Image (cartoon, rainbow, N blue to C red; front, side, top):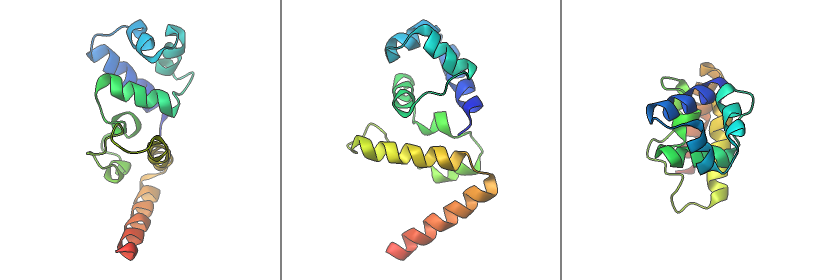
Amino acid sequence: MSNSYIQKKIRELRESHKYKQQDVSDYLHITRQAYTNYETGHRTPDTDTLLKIAKFYHINISELLVEPGSVSTLCVNETTNFESDKHPEENEITLHILQKISALSSKQQLEILDIINDYINKEN
């Protein structure tokens, strides 16, 4: 996961929805300055905050974590709903996996995808 991608994406979302930083920070129950640090890249939102931001904008968490067109997009099931009946720790694990995969090169992501597919095929 690229911190610069996250900062760019959350700023684009806020601006496209015509929100002020204060609006988003109020929803997140953080100071405006803390939120500003996310948009400027001085801090990276933690998993809970990323989930809240996705909920605020009614988007899938993958839209905050995975750049469109990256190979890791192949690893994300677009129908995944992080507000589903899953236990919170399952969402945490999925998010952690996505973050780690997003940090890899395209070649490494394809290798991981092959490993996952092999593992799934072995289980069936």
